[in-house]
Image (cartoon, rainbow, N blue to C red; front, side, top):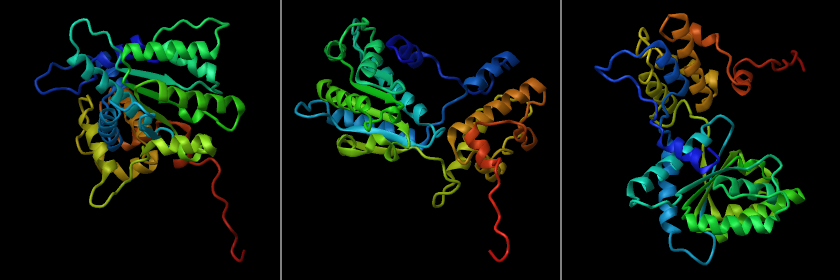
Length: 325
């Protein structure tokens, strides 16, 4: 998805749809494919990001003097940051497509990954690659920058999504140059910038003078783990109910997963990515084994990502203090 053609295919691809009343049963192969993709639930983070992106794009549409306000999506790993970023990008892309007149070939959205150990030149090359701008081996950073700014402006890019921003380290000389390059780009391209990364506020990205410049322009959206309770609501149980309703299993008992909400929250630490993976893998296992339903026994057999497993089954138990010490 880090090229325009790839992102456009993603945006226009029909999202997976749950089984519909009266629909002919799908084959096991079709249901396996469905659960491997599965539905995307509009979480509070996605709703907040969509609303703020729309507002900031309108706010910055006619701003000329300084860089436009930006957004940062932050949070621990596997909490849905990239999903939120891509869903908002898809919405913006499709909205432009619906309004576009015949022959309108503008590019509404750019999606770029910060490369590991990013330098100004490697970051600039990623921006160039998205729109197919050729980058020769001996081309300078300044030349790439000129081509990127000209092409992005000509293409009418209105929203720039930058993922893995925590890879940017302004404490190193090359990272500082990359951070300065990105700041200059925000002032030369008339677009709204949205960044996403792991625990950005605690990373080097927010440190020092360069970090203060970014923090002073960006609003923060916390894409943290879903709590079991929030006031009178139970956000994690609501997520469980939504995903259970989307299952395509012939013998699953509706309501059985919400009853496991305390276990599921403990098992995944409330992380959306870990929970979605657990349910998808369990559904695939249920189809392959012919049981066609998800039970706690089945869920217990599934190995999740290391973070979730360490939270639920730590390999190094906490040391107990002997009495009297």
